[in-house]
Length: 332
Image (cartoon, rainbow, N blue to C red; front, side):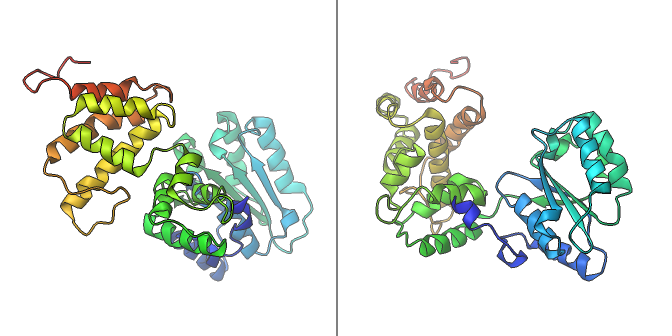
């Protein structure tokens, strides 16, 4: 996979993580490297990769880096084995052995308790890194014994610059705006960007809007822009008809998110006419309607309705059919 092929091997190759890599390198330069760590943040932002790079920076041989998936090794017996290996196994590296515990929030309470002694008094040769997407599940007693670094969603401009370079390396000529759509859909996850890029081929599946929409199950930007404008203008009947035509090519969750992002483009372009949009929109004179639509649609996207359930978004459209003098309260 492309993500594995392009996985960084050095601190310099890591993207947008200077707030993590600089302190890690400084700790080594001071002669007292961080050894008990938590890397926390959303998926696909480089936690495990950074852990591997840090181990390499410390001169730890690959054979002395033990990666464990806590999703399937979450019990107290698993942790006792980890502690035993950390203390007793021979090592090839001159100074350190490393344990990288991925998805560490899956550990049971008793498993976390079994780690406390190791975290409080680690052997001199141990580097222990826990990676997690859910730090709140860590007991305070564990968090207080570790140095924690946050891994946040990467800014869109940083991701776009990176993906443009990758597309160039792969000889992928992208239609205008396609890379922006890929970056937007990844929501700050570099891994998700590369996973999407990996689906394209310069000869058989070029980076066009049409191919992107087929692969991702999205509606076209033109269709979403037209539907969004119908909703803004209160054209409920026409909106329902348009939604019905989309039901065989995409999903309501995807369409809802696309409309929200289109409305966002409209708002930002109205505020700042130099704003570069993904959707081919124009500034609006009906901002109140845009805001009301966002209020109606956002809970649908965040909700737990099934991905095949079109009724919630259809209800939003039907609400635009109700005459203005009718009270909307109680409609649903």
